[in-house]
Length: 518
Image 1 (tube, rainbow, N blue to C red):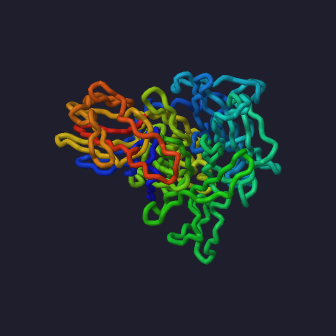
Image 2 (cartoon, helix red, strand yellow):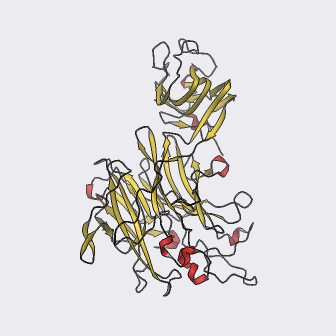
Image 3 (tube, rainbow, N blue to C red):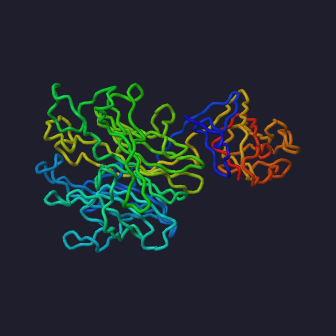
């Protein structure tokens, strides 16, 4: 990880401890990674309507957002039917639609019907017929209320015409009624073509759209034709370790646009590494989201051989250079056995803040990734290859403490000390997200860059915290306001040593999740 001194100007942004940027020293303190806990045993959205075939809850086939306009949780998801395994496509004839559901509490969902697309003369919750693979964002800068949601999706008509697989940019005011933009999106040299796993993000500071995507030519490599090759459907083509010129694993590119139409040439940001990732491990897709001063991302991992999927964490400090977290260990796993999410778990979008928790929606299934699609043609001896009732994608909900991805812990019986580097911020309160276990506590003191304690801000004068809060303001003798720092000097360059402050935390049986100088 490349750090720079300018990164220590942290402003009022929340700091979580995924890396060591603001840590000067620790003593008897460890880093602990946390996983979300499933909120319900059963899925919360699944196929229960006559027109819903296979509700395809996998990466980029569903997305949940909480609309700030009305407070409702809203989900656009995909229903798909494979009517045959013949025709031009190796997958057979696909009929796919995008549907809509909403909820007041994020757990109990309703599927209201509209007249946008009828089946057998009856209204349905289908909002975009003959479409699939959608990713959308809310643009807070959009002045036209009817266009505040922006999306990219694939128009996917049965393969009998030129529009069988077309990239579409669209806008909506309510996620129900969509208007397609007249121009097709263009992605550098690939033109109006991209892969089928995409995570759209809007950068409010730069006011640009960022797309984490598959390159259209993801598997366009020069295969060694002298080697024997399996005859099955090419979901896992031959892979050549340590040969970048034949690198054909599923991986992640990024592209940027100011208007959803004109996109930069895609550039690679996450590629499986030989020696670090497994021989059959691939990166299925990627979605990013901000957490304080950093960008985090959910990275679904697809294992070719077991035909299963799980998810990891990644992060970046600039949005372009990404790093794996927790030594590539999984963040959310399928549960196996006879669970509804036994073999597939995937995360398509960032968490939603609800009270003091993060709601993390995930797609899951007891079936495998593609055995049900091509298994019959390949002669695979698995139940889902011939019995579509064994295919049961659905959406689940897991919860995590606010900022709860990782914590710095001091564990009994010893005490611990955490000291930050000198940081710059005009903030005037020290806010922490911390949980004290039985008998635990945390005290703080504020020092200058010469390691001199500011008068009145020593450990002895600190009002010791012994609770469990996601937002606790430290105080010293009842005073929560931090010692002031000089305003920024207009001259440049000029040393500004007095603007730096450091913080020492004295910890006992406590988990520290984040700090903010607010």
